[in-house]
Length: 172
Image (cartoon, rainbow, N blue to C red; front, top):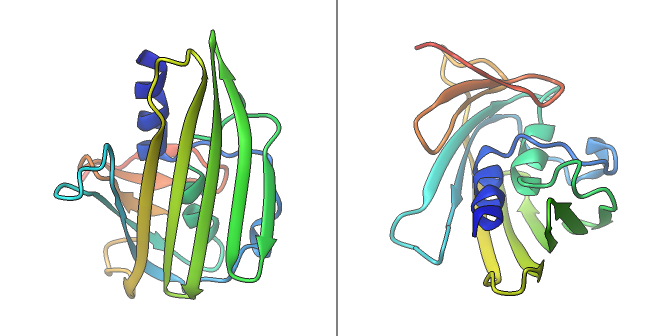
């Protein structure tokens, strides 16, 4: 259960950057202020909502949000891009646990996306499979006091995501 908790924590934080295709190969999205809702444990009444300010140089933040939880323990990540759909498959190994991750992300327009991350425990098998849907939508220009790379995470933390994917807390 500890590994499953780690996976979900990583998905929320969305800080890891796997080795994948260049971000410009993903479907283009609008720069500006994005709201992303994530559903954990099928609790549709309480989505976790995070907000991200992006510009042309930081659009890969949305890529990181969708890929959340993939990290160096998932070395064989395969990414397939077809039109406005991205499919990611990988096997992750952490300590004694092994799990597969399948992500499908659809971008019907440049101002919205829907993704589902499915996590399947290979070892230990007693962990239940989980599906984590995310819906993102462009809500307009970034507020004046928010700069590209800034994010308000679902837990209320205000952070800045650097070009290398590191998260730095911002004191309000």
